[in-house]
Image (tube, rainbow, N blue to C red; front, side, top):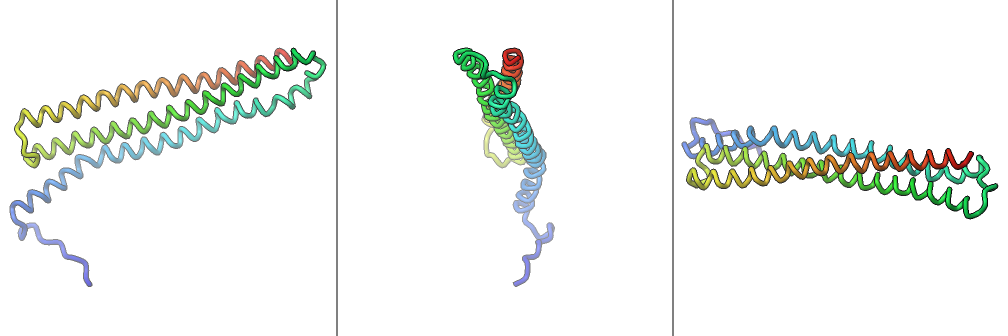
Length: 192
């Protein structure tokens, strides 16, 4: 069985030529947004991996180092109540850092997922424009403008969510770093 041959454009009906032009225009309109969404998604995954790895390593390392630091620096000489307070507060700080790292990772994922949703809306708006220009949607100008405005409203909401998740990811990341720093300083000043 041989591969189907492409029909020469001259052999196509006017309607078939219109549909062929529609698909070419639709792909040309959608492709930049799809490529952008894929690239941002890849960047988000890589960023999340790097960020989470570093935040988790810092705080988990601090948590794991507590027994070694307490033995090395002679915390056993402290009264049991003081020893428990020093070690417990440091452990709580490193544990909080781990929690903030996890929240940072979650919010970062949500941010990039929301960005992909925004790219999909932009693609839909571009495809809508192509449909309207090629008169494929069967709507009046007023109906078309209303539908396009609805897509614009959805896109504005997505853009606000992107901004909120971007800020929240940074806040949780910085809180994780601050929890690590505070716990490290606490141990360093108490274990002398």
